[in-house]
Length: 217
Image 1 (cartoon, helix red, strand yellow):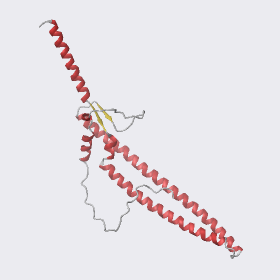
Image 2: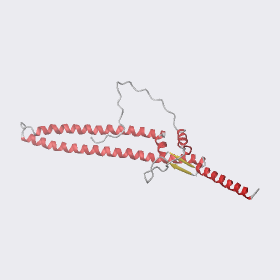
Image 3: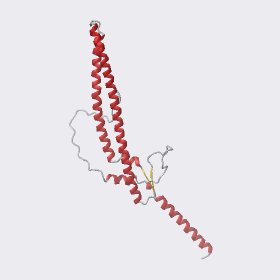
Image 4: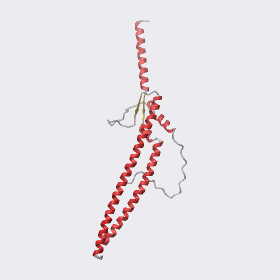
């Protein structure tokens, strides 16, 4: 074999080796959509249902405070009418004005109680979900890492959200590099069996419950 042929074979060998190395490198990088996995996790749905139930209880308590405030407002109007009644005696008017001042202060306290209750409830529910989300993202990250390692990954990237520059960390990835569906399938292995829902009583109409805590009136 002449020198030219040998040189050609060497060049071909290096080219094949380089292509093989590139293929190996490409297959060792995978991506996953963490937000999708969090949103579609059965535990997330369960947590949202719990928060929804607690928000409904909070709304009932807020409605109780509002009703109490409205009662005070009606009482305030009555004593104000007495204080402005031209036929009433001066001492009756004076007492009515004093009563009106007390009722007004009670109304203000109820307003403050309502605002404080709603703000505290919103913050509590938001903090509970934030804590839950942090725990779940850590759990999902560990599972995604295990799956990626089993596939021989050297690098796993999250393609779900923007980075510090405001753009996605992954501009493009081949679908074959996305292991989101594999991680989701692994997650669903732990999903508890669905319980049969009890039949709802027949009603003429149903109103969908509000999920959010009521805002200020």
